[in-house]
Length: 339
Ligand SMILES: Nc1ncnc2c1ncn2[C@@H]1O[C@H](COP(=O)(O)OP(=O)(O)OP(=O)(O)O)[C@@H](O)[C@H]1O
Image 1 (cartoon, protein in one colour):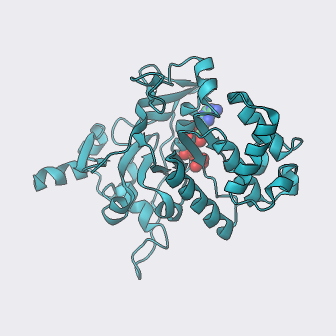
Image 2 (cartoon, rainbow, N blue to C red):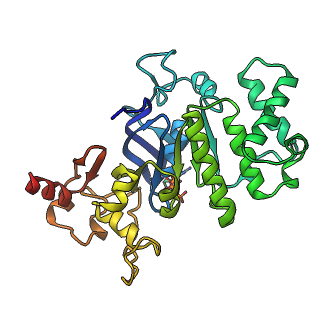
Image 3 (spheres, rainbow, N blue to C red):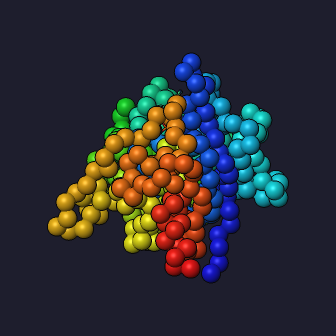
């Protein structure tokens, strides 16, 4: 089986917010690898560190937040520059500025508030192109029009001169995608890109993201709490809990063979995924406060299978099969028994 090229490899990423009450461990040992032409979905309850992980990749963590020493975010999207990759966790502001908006782009949940209301959408796309490439204004404008057409906006030569308020939410999100794609990014981070849109527009935006991935080979990180969205567009999924990945697997494998009790709980709480006729469950309890994390497994307090061992130490990486890994003592023991 051919494996796509690695774009980014995150190892032991820790992001702490230094507050008066102590260190709030928003991300606490996160790790994953992203590949070209693949969409990685990051799922998990509110506050589990999805957005902070994305902000770290973009160099946007600011005080009181800190990417802790030892964290690695190795960007390998452009091997011409450096065979070993560039550690974005320790890169200079200048190095990150060059990559952000160019090789790594981001689209956000609220397209209206991410676009500048007093600048036409065309000028905003052009500004991005002109910042990163040496092209004339005319060429940049033509590129903006072509990009608007590419993301499915009709009459792009007219829309290019519109202000964001003249467009619908779905159109603004398309503009954001056009902007993100203006410099052919190796990695596109989409943080809840369809949450603010109605269902039909949601489906169109997701299929647009799929099309772009297939046509350009861009690696996409999709942050969402919606497993329905994950099923539609993800190739791989990371399930995060309290700042850590607790399970990672290819999407079909995760849905057919979820292992971590938290992943199973998430699936049972989704109406479309729970077994027909079975009562919908919610996961009792709440995520631990990142200021006071327990010494054992962070899910122990909510886990129906908790044992003393779970309260004593942190579970380690257990391989279930190729690219399916779980961090759970119960799964570790099951795998040992299976030999
Ligand atoms: N500026 C800040 N100061 C202190 N804590 C912060 C700050 N920004 C984020 N956090 C904390 O970091 C943790 C992770 O937040 P993050 O926004 O990454 O969660 P999330 O999984 O993206 O949630 P959501 O789905 O609600 O967007 C949370 O506990 C949050 O309170």
